[in-house]
Image (cartoon, rainbow, N blue to C red; front, top):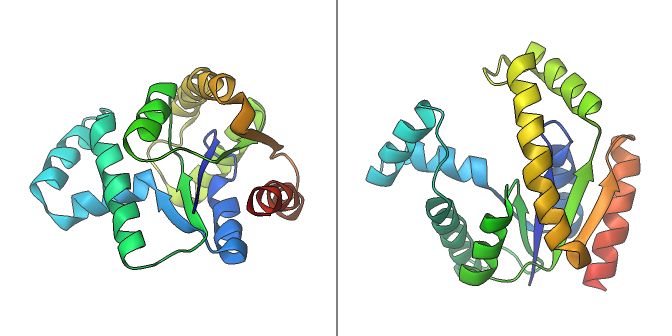
Length: 189
């Protein structure tokens, strides 16, 4: 079973490409954001403490996110929910998280990095904001998120050079997926 991380800035198209990867290759999709929201919704004591952190705009500690990812992977394996492997979406957000993942969960086989310009990310997020009314999709917050992403992501890409496939995510959904498919076909061959 393969483990793939999908990284890229806010608005780079990770979600869209993950849907296409799952449909074609049968990976089990794990989104760290979805896991956190599910845990909060569960009403568990852990969920209640996460709700408190998130409502204050604070980061959730890495060990908690890792526990949630590991628990979901173990559950999927027990249920035989995948034979291809795991598609970890939006994680790691910084190098230390990646190193801990490999130490405490499993090695990563491939990292797909959807690369887009700051201008494209800003334009896409402002477009999404007009539709979704997400509180974090305003121009000031967007610029800050992109700045932080560029620094943190650069460290991941530099450390994992041999495992990163950088995909220009400025084109059409299908063109981008064509590049993704080449990388995955090579990995799974």
